[in-house]
Length: 288
Image (cartoon, rainbow, N blue to C red; front, side, top):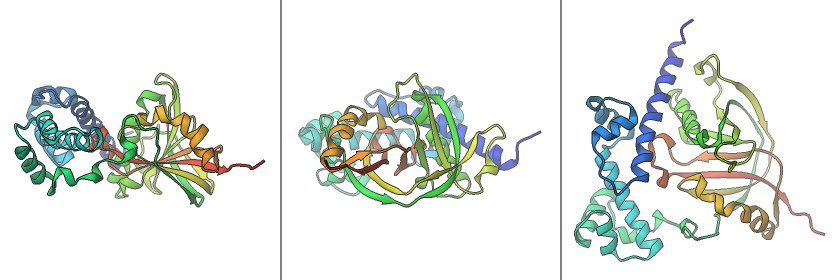
């Protein structure tokens, strides 16, 4: 039996976004390299003839524009976080002078690099032990969810799928939620079970062999964590956050899934620029 038209469209969209996402990740992780279209097309497993047009349609900018934008943003972070000079940052971004860098940055973002303090925060410093969080109350709710069981290292690419589900079905991809039931930072080779929330009516778009269930998230208090970049960047800070930071603030972690929202569309946003929100279930610390 053939898949319904909507399901076929969804499968094609997920496959294309995964291909383009591999290219974006590669560019972001190898930013100082020279990237040929043939090389990037090979990473995406798309013919060189179709790659440039496909990439530009999905991402909204060409691969060359992506590299330039990422190098400019990296230079901004280096100025504000690492304290290097504008000239040093300009040379690292591929510009021969601070004036040329400033002109390029203004053309790209409409403002000066030295004014772009919103590109970084104190918690973005590589050696910073801070995790930016607040305590919020979330009401309970019920949702349909798609279950993924895979090695932890492949969990995050699966997360991008549900944003595509939302986009294809007309929902807001920024409001997708992932639920982690056995920890955020399991070893890469360990089988991870996480569940991606989908919207009512989306079940009909899913492949027939997809494992879908209905889950109930209880109301309660959560530590809301804002993070920039890769989720794994939080790993070195996580245990101190749970063991020391939360108790110092009068809270302790409680049982229940960790919720994850996405401030960025994962499939088209380079890893270093992604913004996300974690909701860690907590309870007031018992006072002796």
